[in-house]
Length: 256
Length: 370
Image (tube, rainbow over all chains, first blue to last red):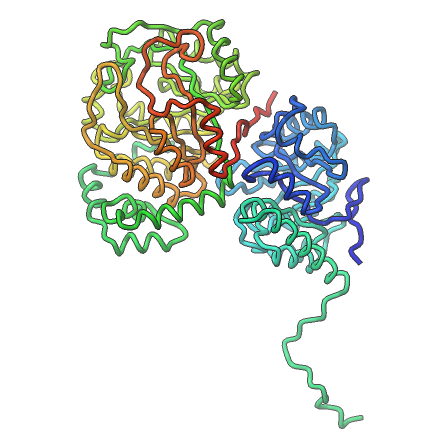
């Protein structure tokens, strides 16, 4: 149970990916993320000083088991995203990038056209591309065709904590995908994360729900357990939901 | 081509103000239970009828701010480059008629100021000038941006309104945001306070955010100067402006500031008083209207007020500000544009924010382009 997740050349024991924003201190961020047991932690390039080895956020995440996933949050075009990715590759010595292009600063909804363009370019440049996108099944297949290593459809707008508002489309994406599907954005409660895992998502990414809770360390642990439970349930195959009661004495038993 | 002025001209100041004062407690209660507020709800929340609901507004504002921005506070510092000004503004220490020593920083002096602010930790900088196109026109501003852009992650300006192509030039060279306050949306009062200079053109200033939006500036800061006219009506028109801009220039981020008239050389007493309670009400009303808009607080306000407002909706704050060119290191004793109220050091303000459970964010932008 709880098979490891493989993305590109890396294997992950934890299927909970986490973000670094919105914590009340870098120390609380570090302690919470350690409690989550997350092995892939996204960090916004715009928030860190990649030239500074003593950068507050980066120095707090200097743990051997943590893989840093730089994101391109703040860019508005494919061109800017490629530039940001190259900057992060050089500074953070990783070719992994979470591709975020959201020209809409209010709801931070991703631009599908620019994202596809940037993904294609970044794959050619040798990046492991993890694109943040709307829960659009066709876009997911197009991204898969250009060579991304996973897709990261949203459950609801970033930071909204509304849960899996895109459930019907996530179902289609998971059914069709040949690359891992990581539900990103909108997951506001451990039960949302468990639900995403139960329907077959390969991982979830959570930030606000942990960072903004009253007790981020406890909440990080709660998410860890929820993701494990959801995955275990998925692997154990959930019992089917039936519209009608199944009589213990079948109505047609007299025929035999 | 869309322009805010076309929308603005369909409104009447007196009628708008009356409609705000006519709002009832029932309308306030209705606004408080809605998820998506419209401008009529905003009117209710800034009306006198909302006063008894201030605590409830503050609570909601705190929750919404925490949800969207987390436990963080963005730090920025203003850097005054020049006090040269060709305008007469009745409320400003830089006004042409004020006989003060005029000064415009040289490249060397700018870099001295940069060194001081970098040493304090600042990575977001607000460049400020008076309005003197000959001495501090777009070429001077462009030069300053190019000079300092490798030192700061985020450069914002608060200077005279420029043409669209001038903004485009500055964006290309590293400009992130522009703050442009209408001062007052009351056309006649505006004219009284700006009798001479380019700033006396109300419509050119009103159209500035449109030019900024078209030029692709990343963030536009709006606001009114409270004390010139009734703060409620001015705030309504600021909100109207915000909503229009958000729909029209949807890729742009927006911030709101809340400057109240402060003492300065050749001072003007506020025509309309805005109390601390009024200001809290307004800040909370903006947060309830829009959970994504950035709300900014300068050192114009007192220590006590700032200590308490940081948990009620504000998302960015300055500290240790000097409002005179060269004020940090080059010429600390020269005359300020206005007196600041919170004179604490950056370190003290950071400490205060930490004790209030807020992570200080120094950097939250990167100029990702070649």
